[in-house]
Image (cartoon, rainbow, N blue to C red; front, side):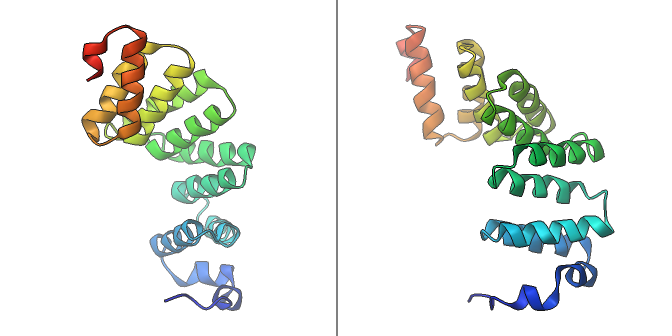
Length: 178
């Protein structure tokens, strides 16, 4: 079933942020964001941050919403704040890497994506994006090594298999492409 459209306006974000514990507020804001109510989610994240300015999750998730809206500078600032609060937050490093990649700042993207997999060594999306960054730098060997990590973690990663085949063919190593 669908929530009535005016519930959020009726309750008010500041009051909603006071009603529940931090986990519930963050989960609701994330639900709103994932349901494409990004502006509503942003307002709730802002309300959460009024009461809990050191919530690294709220900063990271608010950054993701800013990224969705193309507000890359604001997204960067939120991701950096999240990392300042929790330096080993793999998601924030990943997000900074993706944002840097979007801006064609490949060395910066690589640095952040490497941090993401350092802090979470099973982070398939971070490995894949790291491999993509290596491919942009024409670093075939690092791209192959990183894509191999992707298919080791997720054997049905079709795009990773495809790129591995292309990279091995560039090296004229057709046997490895299988």
